[in-house]
Image (cartoon, rainbow, N blue to C red; front, side, top):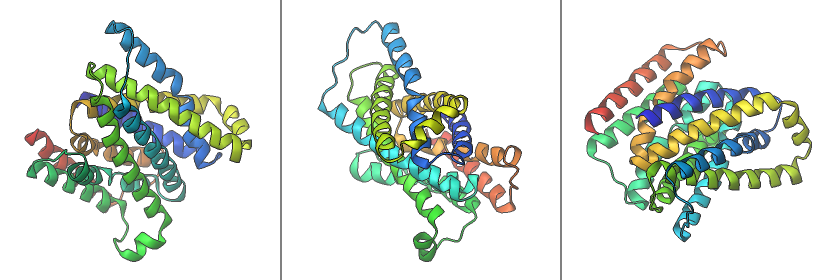
Length: 291
C-alpha cells in the first residue's frame, strides 16, 4: 500500500508535467524525456540497493529479459498514447480512460498469466473502473470508440499499461532476489532499454526535438525524477502483490488527478466526476476489506 500510494502521487505529478511539456514538444519526445532524464536515478537506486544487500552480481535468465523487454515496449506505447490523449482532451478524462488498465490487468492476468482474483477482488476492479468511466464524462458506444481519438488513445494506454504491469511482475519474480532489489533491477533494465529505443527514434525521425528538449532541461529533469519515483512505487508494489490488486488501489490516482485538474489547470469538477470519485473510493474500501 505504501509503495502504491507513492506511485499514485508521483505519477499524478509527472503526468501533469507531461501535459505541460507536450504543448511544446511532440508526444514521442515527451516519452523520451520520461526515460532519458529518469535513467540516472533508476541506475543509482538499483546500485544503491545492490550495495545495501551486499550482492556482487546478478545473472538473469531468459525469462527475465523476455518479460522485461515486452514490458518496456508496452510501456513505451502506453506513454505515447497517454500523452496524445492528454494533448487532445481534458487532463482528467485522458487519465481516466488510461485507468481501464485495472480491469484489463485483471482479465488478461486471469486468462494468460495464472493470476486470478477472488470474486470480491473482481467486484472491486469493476467498481473502480466504472468510477473512472463515469467521471470521464463521455457516452459509451461503438461510434465513440471508433471516432473519438482521445478515447482510442486512452484505451490504448490502458491496454499497454496492463500488459506492462503483468510482464514486469513476471520479470521481477523470475529473479531469486529480495523483492525491492528485483524490482529495481527490472526498472533499471526497462528504463535503459526504453531510453535507447526512444532516443534512436527521435534521432532518426524527429531530430529537431532534441534541441527543444535541451531548452526545457529543468522541466524535463522534473519529469524524469518524478517518473522514476513513481516507477519505484509501481514496480515494487507489483513485485509484492497481484498486479490487478495494485492497479485497483492505484485508482486513487484519479481522485488526485481531479484535484490537480481543479486547482492547477483550473478545469471544473462536475457532478458526474464527483460520483466517479465516490465509486473509486468504494472500490478501494472493498479492496482493503478482502486483501
